[in-house]
Length: 126
Picture 1 (cartoon, rainbow, N blue to C red):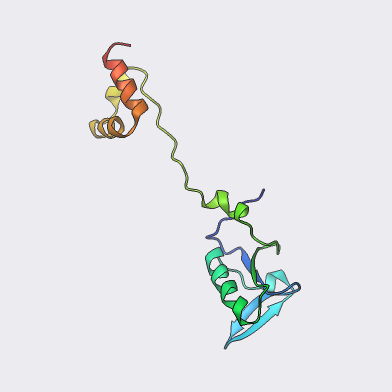
Picture 2: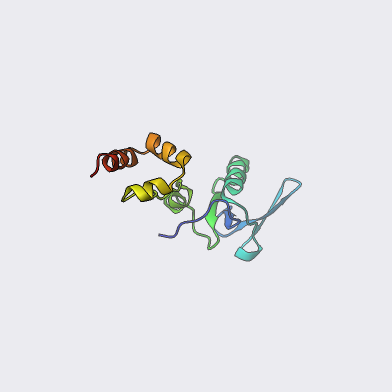
């Protein structure tokens, strides 16, 4: 499944079955059937605009991707999931442990149970 970055300007607003939002000028909504002529915005902006259009006579207003497909939660889920930082490798011996700064060693010892266990093993001679 394709994932979309909600921060990029790659979203459109479909206002009915045939047209996409081109612009809003002095409360006048203009639509277009041409995707490249439609308003492009980030997901949050398009969602706000579509939500504002629905009670104002455009009940079908929805956010779409650049190909005109309705955006689903699955399409955004992976792009908006927080990145889990890769864990630094555990030291294999005392030399590798001593190569770390004291600050880094203390931080990891307090916050990473695996690191704490490995340090304890190294100092016990295992």
